[in-house]
Amino acid sequence: MPLWFFLVVVLVPLIDLFVLVRIGGFLGLWMTVFLVICTSVAGLALARWQGLRSLVAIRADLAEGRMPADRLADGALLMLAALLLLVPGFLTDIPALVLLVPPIRRWCRRGLGRYLRARGVITMVVSRSDGVNCESGEAVIYEAGAELPRPAKYVQNEAGR
Image (spheres, one colour):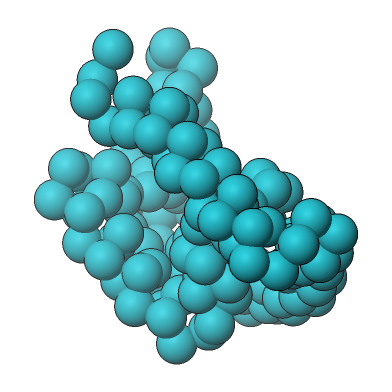
């Protein structure tokens, strides 16, 4: 088991529980429960609202023939924020609420993009059968965010991936 997995699955909930107990000792049980529920409900409502905005932007990008890589990354970060908000506790709420701020999410998205480009994950293969950019049956690799020529046909390799 990797060390980071151990830290995330075991230590973060333990530290979160410790923080909850300390805050509960200071504010009282019911006020602490109320705050945990309020941050979860408010954060999830905000994540839902921003997630719907991202979905509309993804559809607009696809309708205009653009690769919606940035919008998809935003959606993934919003899903991570929503997941963190579902975990009870203040320690996980802090990074979740920070991810809901669009400029910070943009900064995280750029870092994620650099990481994925360094690992060779970000590429898209588009097969063109009309011979505009390449011979029939060849493939063209587009970087994320590139303008896609129309009509583009998405293909799978022999393994179905």
